[in-house]
Length: 155
Image 1 (tube, rainbow, N blue to C red):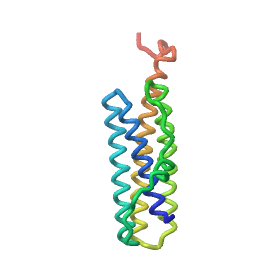
Image 2 (image 1 turned 135 degrees about the vertical axis):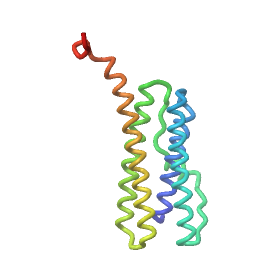
Image 3 (image 1 turned 135 degrees about the horizontal axis):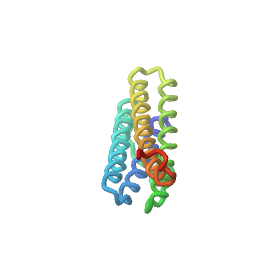
Image 4 (image 1 turned 180 degrees about the vertical axis):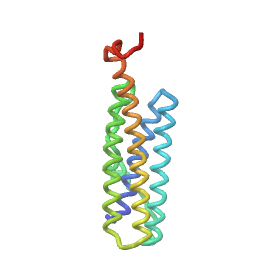
């Protein structure tokens, strides 16, 4: 399998994961963020498919069994614990994808393809940072309710 085709399957899996999570989240702000991430991953897929066409004159056709294998493990998101688990899985996946694209950028001599991989690594890093901020917000929200903070309050 060509590295671009492998990347397309990674993006399909990420898109499907974010879409499933977005569809399950009740909080409208959280739903919007996950559905936006799904759209971003779909945009990555489209870019990569255009490169398969440009470089190899291949029209990508997803194989259902390979698509199913490419999906990030899906979790139930019915409560905060589920949301935190989903964020952790997504953060790990974004870190792996950033590393994957960075490695591919270093493995190619084609300046345009290198630029594509660098751009995708940067976008995945942006997703990573967004998800980290969401996780920290979620954890931080619980943290403040779990400690005895009366000593920090003004009289």
